[in-house]
Image (cartoon, rainbow, N blue to C red; front, side, top):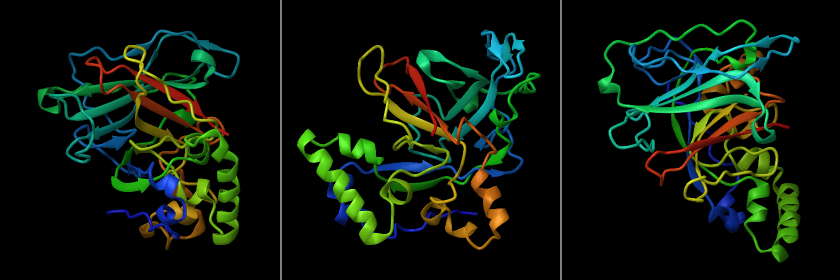
Length: 295
């Protein structure tokens, strides 16, 4: 099935030209439970990991939320995307597949809490014998283990969130923009943040769906702002944003089935939050960073 996000119910570019100037393209992945193979794009599916390459292990001492501490923990596969499915994937030369894994326990780097992600790029043609991913370690939070999902990539135009939009303006224009956004909602019945701006769910590129103030990382090597590589979100959409973001093909199902579709890969990160993974596309070693964000 090719899923299609409904057209915006209002013309954002005409109503808010400042937002139009910041529009970006994102690829919504629309994960749905399935049985992907290691040679397919997936969320939570088996990765194309070479049998002769050591499986990554997080060496930190983890608190599992029950009062117990856990030792070294294998990383878990979270997302795998082949360039054949998403041609605009910014893969390094000679690579055609993005793999994201994470340590599923909560980490606290620089004051942030959430799973600790890892990025790997590889050439799928160079992988012959494939390793079997280890099972989640005992005590791993179940809602940090994505269920195996097939993907249905869809390209969508999106706009920055309200905070990012307002903060892009000169100081003397910021308060008037907040007023304009309030009047826009009153006149149209659509909330810019929830219904029109940044696409929710698991996606590639575009804007992170910040719920807290934007916190884009800069590359530690070149000081450039990092590229938003992938969002790993708790939900495809929520009880309000589904009105504009739930795909057309999923709108005829019953409410309880729609809830299951919105749950996507079955993740629950904090209070319906997400992990945003960034990468520097300028530096040859492609350093990456992440942010965790929730209500």
